[in-house]
Image (cartoon, rainbow, N blue to C red; front, side):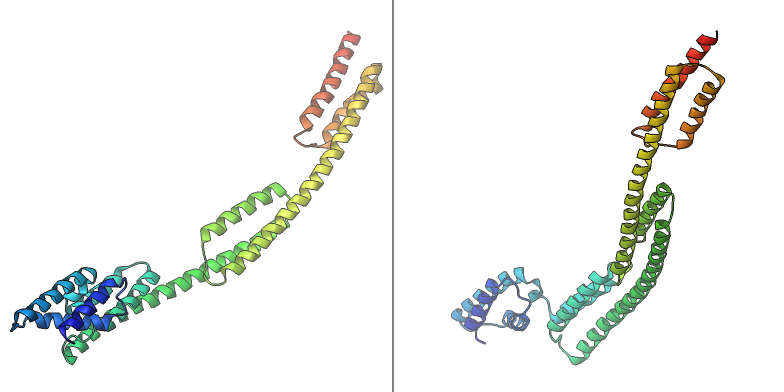
Length: 294
């Protein structure tokens, strides 16, 4: 390739954004550059073309620094970069980087002699073997960890199913919240994790449906209890209106208290107000009884 062709090639490469697929052209330019630097030109015209090529080559070298290094130096740098990956904790990212370095090593070209190339390859392969051994150990440990996580999640699912059968909804709700937190703390368990989540989500949904159903039942029960308490308040007012203060009547008033207590809680929205009304009537009855007897 003459100098004009070399100059045209450099200009072409300067226009490209990515030179990864032009490795053979880069090697050719590197060889010609070193050859021309050590050659004495016979004429001014030839020297002018040489200078032009060198100037363009140096401009391209700013874009592709490896042009100024030999294949041997490039491979040494690649080996050192690969060796640093052995200390990298992110194995998957490091593996991707090693694949890129392997491609760069192949593209670096021959370093001079077969013996030297074999020596460099053996050195690079030893680093790769060490990395793959580390990678294997990492995935073995990951598989073990994921198996333990899956076992924990399966246990959580079984416990969630038992929570669904609990009668005490308040306690069951607290336990389900604790299981949900525990599930999150376990973390991702690898392949199949989404199926475990579906089972756990199903158990949580069933619990929510039961809680909803029990809430409806509880509201109905509260309504029934509130109606009974309203009836007792009505009866208490009737006794207060009569105010005979006979032994039989006094016994009825006292029994109303026991009946009211036996009915049970009627919901936070009504229970306090109902008790206040009931208690006012009962207290007024006994206050009037005291005044009457005195």
